[in-house]
Image: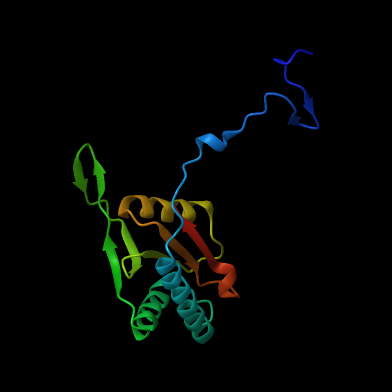
Length: 154
């Protein structure tokens, strides 16, 4: 075998192995202030879930989490419209961010049997369109709230 040929052993390329490290976008770490806000949001979600448990509508959890976050002195916006920019025009496609906390963290609430990849894609799209770096996807229909929280960053 020449150096230009590829040997494959146990499904792994030994020579000319593709390393996509150089194609990954290097991003700045999430700022500590943003992480601190995210930690407060998770703690507030734990409080809401401990009090109410699973099984209610998403809108109920949204209102209770909004209340809990405001009690903690956090600035929270609810049901923020996110336009889509297409062909140089801002279009209202009816997309809404459930909560935006301290203008740093997007919170998307669910009350579903299980989170699906489309839910994650939804949050990542919201982050991109709203120009935020950190999102929390929270499913309150989990037995333990920590199993229902996903942290997503871009």
